[in-house]
Length: 417
Image 1 (cartoon, rainbow, N blue to C red):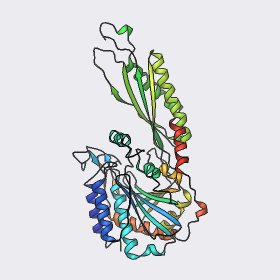
Image 2: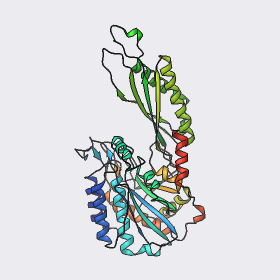
Image 3: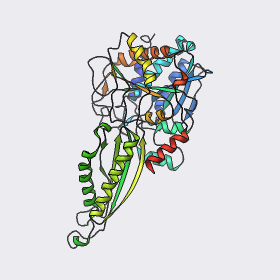
């Protein structure tokens, strides 16, 4: 059946790809998805959340609930060949394929009625704003109370969208081009936070009286040097990534600058090491300001938690792969420094993310584009249906865990407070 719906799914994917939208603004994308689902199932029931998010399910009323998650948003990449000329949004992270894959899976399961054989309810959850960007817009949403979290999954968690879910499956593009059709499991993602360092000094005339100044720009330069030297002290197993940039300043060549804001992300593979590395960065900033008799104000903003996949669930994917003859390669047990809000959700419930090939170019890059649509929109969705069929009757609820949103909030406070 997947081959008979391939052309339709491909057209949906292309429509979403050519109409990219940033997080919490995915209104056209949502409309496209909902129209498709209602054409498949006229009795479709939706629960909406977070401006553009929504969920629907197959096989309601069962005690075990498994979520299949698709992410709606695009990346800000104005130089991408298919970027929206007005917003700079572009689908060079592959989220449009997630949506198309979810729709292919939904249509097959609904029309074949295979979902009726499952001993669990399969809940399709379409989540906005996975990408951590467009923060000024999201600041406004925070101020007016529309959201409380920048990321779509933490916001959905706050709203109780996942309260009745026992475990979750997500899929995501693998960066790079592969000679053979490939999937991966158990890839760990980094967690990250943002640090803002506001260096303060004393402004004077740069020609007449630089002697009594306190140069905030020099403090930020010293900080950059300190960060560079501190990299030697970062545990390489944690795959730490730090990228300081100038966020704000008010400089002219005839005035010694008295204010310079440097921002950086901080990525690592564990919460514990994020905390440790943050202390090192803060000390470097304080020391740099003190060395030049200035001051520094420090702000910390949480990004996403590290993601460690739940290997018990990954084994169902491995077992389905071993019976599949259309996918060539299974990669296992990788770790990368990219992050995602699936890490936050995985704190509350067990989650896995199945990576899939089918692209060329650098993920998030200007050259990123799909090159194997048959794999993406026919073969891979068919494989996912095999995974879910294989899971039926085999998932032991005693092997799963569940934490509350209150526990999640408490953890976040230990990182940013």
